[in-house]
Length: 619
Image (cartoon, rainbow, N blue to C red; front, side, top):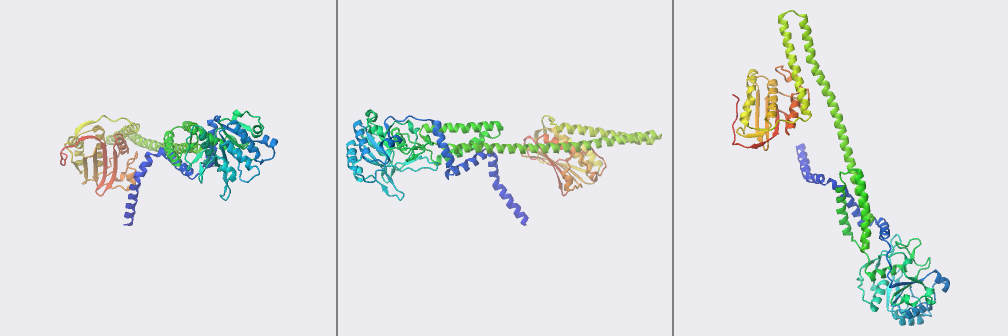
């Protein structure tokens, strides 16, 4: 009982898993890409591939190339030359007052200080007056490590047009990729500068302060319009260089407030370039829009299986070529998207492409190796069977010849007419045996090489059965056997290969008459089952052990224990029969029933079903 329950449980599990196995079979080419996409999506969502994307970020900007700086933007640099000429930094604030006086004379629109003026100074009054006179000054604000605001001194803050924060978060590679547009209601320094510029010129649409601004780096810092602070305050620069422009004042001297960018890593630029970049982005509305994580995951889940399906079943060379081409193509697409102000992931998709290509190629090579191993095993098995076949065939061919040679030798030694008659009978029987064996070998060889069967014909099933059974009636009676025929579809007109089927049924009836004991039953049944004709030949009184049933269709198989009438045979009949049935697209099985041995043959047909028929008896 426990075995029955476990079998039922196992079968129910297999039935439940069958749709999944069928789905895996249909979608097997997509599995490497689906697996790669799932892994990459998880790693990307957990930001574990951030170092890879940081490298891709640099590569994208270099592929896109350097862009031109806006001529409305000018940098007044506190550079190394200014430090040598004016003195050690920080400077007295009268220097900044002098700079603002020059900017006022030059009619600069906005002056932006990337400097924290948080401590009171004796020069604050003069600087405040210069700020008021210029009218477009933006000062900087920050926060300390404890979150306390670092504000400009009140006198300067009241005189300035606005204040902007200079807070920026650097990623692990030292690059600032985004800036908060506003913190605690304080706009970024670049946002405040652009707002101020809009007051004096055409209004510029600005983004909401509740979202970060992704920097679209323009190019190397030395390409921006820049002038040395010392040259400006000493009147060496044409005032027209600052007229109606945004003038950004910041430190560029080596070792002070250094900042790496995709274009300036060794040596790095300074943080004033960050604010210059963001101002340009705001003037041109060219800040970047990164793809959201959801879109990236969807892209992975679509691209991975698609690429896997394209690569599947191709040669190794094609797979490598397509994988490399798709990877390079994606990098170029990423550079094109960057030119359109869209920031896509770069090296993670390339890793997905390479992983998908590698797994697909590995899967195909494993399958090819498995197929090759199966073919090698099949060839080895075929070679073994061939050797066994020829060994047995040579023995079977030599046996009748040896008997004939023996009979001829006896004929030469005997003068008795009765002996001659007996020996001639032996020669005739052995010649017939040899002839039958050679014919069976030729038939077996032709069927093994796929010889085409005869074309199908249309017959009435009952008439055909009567013709087939008729030659075996007298033989069965002579052996004291009973031969019966049964069919439920006797009036059906069936179209199939009757010639081959006749040979099959003849061989089965011949074996039945040969191996059925006296007073036993031989039964031929024919029925239409769906689109097949099923023929069964059963004979009672014959019992074969299970291990004999396994070998019953092997070439040269014979069981002399059930040859009650000692009629012999070549041992190729059932082997030929099996190949002939398979050639017709059918099947043959042997089974041991309680009443005896049963052979079941199923062959495909085109059938028009008749009214139910009755049992037929041979006349």
